[in-house]
Image 1: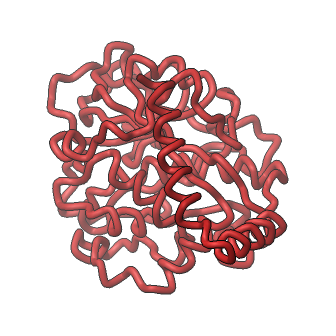
Image 2 (image 1 turned 180 degrees about the vertical axis):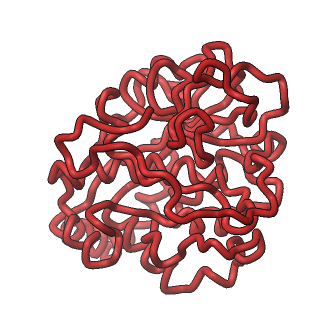
Length: 325
């Protein structure tokens, strides 16, 4: 079901696993923790609506498949329980590859020089986000990894890869996160502003007209006639809602139907009531940063920085509250 229009280097069928995993000891479709999601939600969360900020990479539905990352099962020798991190990272890879392949990135050379581009594709580390967001053996909320991306940025996949020999402890080991990786993530955020909004699943059909979403569901019954039927099992897995129809998803487990990572779910498939939109709200060039530093120096000189920061936080919160009340 994957593939693109064939006119881009990103076209063609979605490739299967980046390496084979014949000896996985624990593959239980885990990674989303509904209880933690409820705990992590806040009244201050931005909510998707008519005044939402547009993304810099709004990819038309019919070509979103084209820029997807190469599929990878969320397991080494053991399941990583990292789907709640994989899903938003996959969306950002799709978005950045769209911008990269269409020459719409001002920071293209910086990304290339710092290892974000492999074989002509931008790749981000899932493990960096899974570890920093506190993924456990029973997974994570949807919000925690997305908020971690907002705060810590993204780093190249090759600097923190998933290896075929890894058990859960190996993959999620906090000691894998070095200060150099954190510094690179912050450098990334100096160039790209990444934001997110909570989405009521009733609004997903509207959102998918223009963008993708991170959703949670129950994984998976045996497919019937090429699609996965409704199940009443508990919610335990996070995926990318890729395009309409609503239940077309990009997953971190292989499709039993045709062996790629794009799956078709039944129209009545149960989806968790909260989803998330992740997006690129700004790209900052070197010239922009120079102007920012000049303004910063002026504010520091006259002792206005703390006052301005406090005023802006209060103002932006009030504006969002008016629009989303």
